[in-house]
Length: 104
Image (cartoon, rainbow, N blue to C red; front, side, top):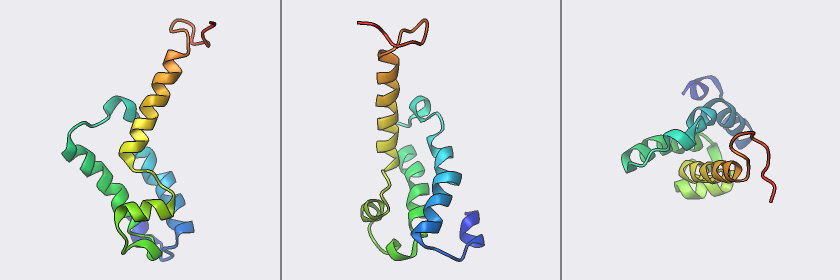
């Protein structure tokens, strides 16, 4: 992790914006299409976020779910599920040919 070597400030205010702008977009990109369904693949992707949350000084010794709650971050599998639901709702509520909202 490049920011682990280059940033000495490990506060929530520094690490979270870096993670959210540099790392998470790569994990979320087209997630509704490539959504992993094997447990080993889900764990592999989740491990990236797990490592990033350990960089924050005040929460690095806590359990993963506790770190997520304190940092106000969702688990990546929950984010993917939410994205899929939003995409389905968006596609269901629009006319497939024109892309405009359906009239009832």
